[in-house]
Length: 64
Image 1 (cartoon, rainbow, N blue to C red):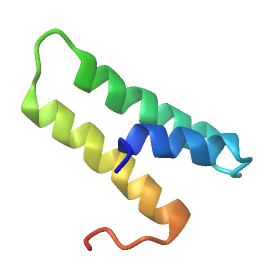
Image 2 (cartoon, rainbow, N blue to C red):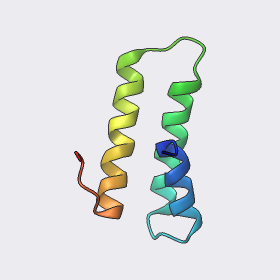
Image 3 (tube, one colour):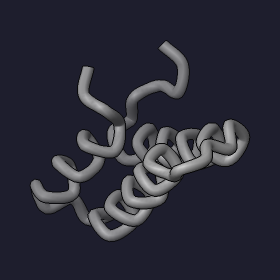
Image 4 (cartoon, rainbow, N blue to C red):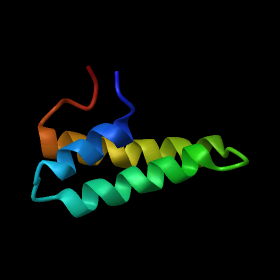
């Protein structure tokens, strides 16, 4: 499965009306993942914010 941030950028590129938010959350998630020193709580928080937005936009359930 593609990384959540990549899926968010693809959805934004397809003209989604919340494209700016999708890109912002995708960038935030990537920044946390790519950091030199990982803070697990910060990475998880960024992922949760991105996932919440993804689910709001796509209608996908938060938990599968």
